[in-house]
Amino acid sequence: MSVKNKLDDYKQRQEAKAYFRSNNDLYLDAGGWIKVLILGFLVSVGCGIVLGYVRDILPFVSSIMYIIPALVIANTITKVSGVHSSQMAIAAVVLTFISYIMSYLAYTMIFYYQSLGIMINMFTIQNISSIIQSMLFGNLFSTIIMAVGLVFAYQQAQ
Image 1 (cartoon, one colour):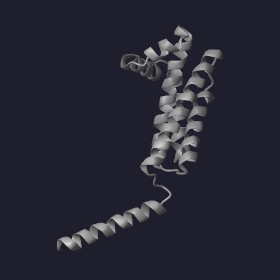
Image 2 (image 1 turned 180 degrees about the vertical axis):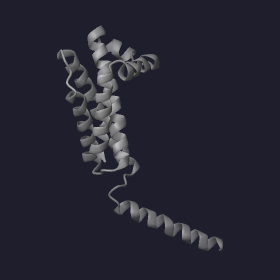
Image 3 (image 1 turned 90 degrees about the vertical axis):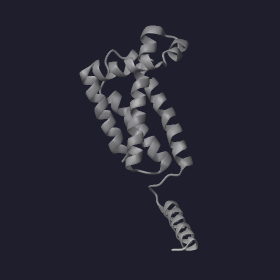
Image 4 (image 1 turned 60 degrees about the vertical axis):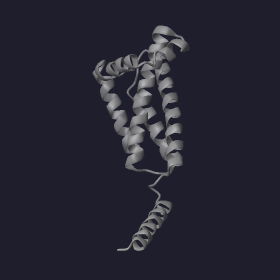
């Protein structure tokens, strides 16, 4: 093949790829992913803070309280993107896990410190790793319910 034929073949493949991506509902461009991830992160942080406050206010925490943020986050990112796919499901699981971390962080801030400045100082690798250890190994029932919430988020966004 000559160089001109290879260049023409390359251009045809690029045009076919662009056509496929523009007519495929399951494909998001970079701008769409940025919008989905930023809005999903904000919703995730908000759900985590609300869950932390609810854990502080109520003397008991129902297992539904861990599933609701998973469903809210999964529905939010699928509504914003308009896509139900495995990539959205993985994004929903990661954002739901961030929400659970934020709920523990907010609960710790309310229970021990009650200051936003101290909460900002808690964002160190050591503190976040201890929060994750507390989440995963602190209470077996809560860990199981969080895992169920992650499964719900995956199924809702897929």
